[in-house]
Image (cartoon, rainbow, N blue to C red; front, side, top):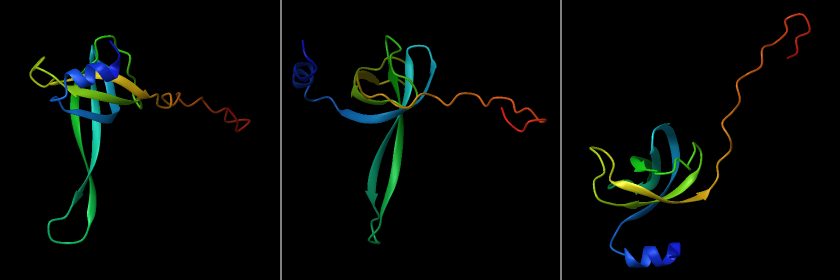
Length: 107
């Protein structure tokens, strides 16, 4: 079954796209979903974000990846979303700084 068929079958479920901000838990990722909100009185649009805990059965998503998530039944106290697909791979985590040699001033 393709991804589009699965989405069509579960049309009533909410789908969001967000960025993975944490993958430290086993089979769980934290996804930040940004949105724009208009101020009720002033003509200003501000950025807001919501964080969701998402079930990732195979631990495929890493920090920085953009992912598609879908609403599902409660899986734990906080998890009500599951990973559908990794939309775009993010940049790899920055590597630790190399020690600097004081005599040469170079790493």
